[in-house]
Image (cartoon, rainbow, N blue to C red; front, top):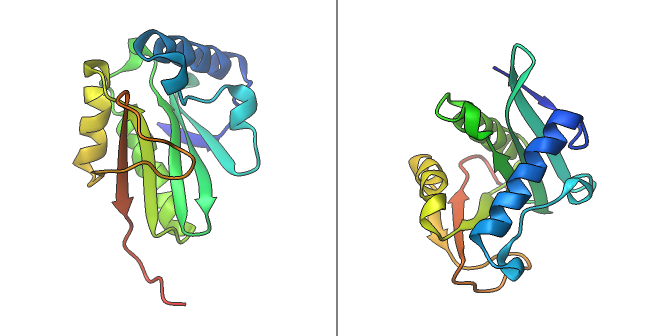
Length: 157
């Protein structure tokens, strides 16, 4: 698997992101859908990656800088046809490594609370993410689960 910075407007990535947004809108009310569209993923505070094998798109993920010491995982998605192959874990590990490289003290995320999100929550828990309250601009929402992870490292000023 290769993970590289990518353009969210690339046709196969765009299709995956469109699938992601449609699915999120099926599972949550509009005010509780926090997935970003292509334009939202192209802002300077976000780095977007794809994971591929032999040119085939296996997933994507993004890292948003909330503050110099705090990042947020955005747009983690694997196409339904390519799930259970390790692409999601590979992307998560890549984002964790990048967050540590940037010197972040904390990495957070928002995901859904419905049963359909349990596999994602389990993946995040498996690397140490813990439930937390809303962060950044999020508000309490029964359709959202907020998770955070304190990152190890030398954070001496």
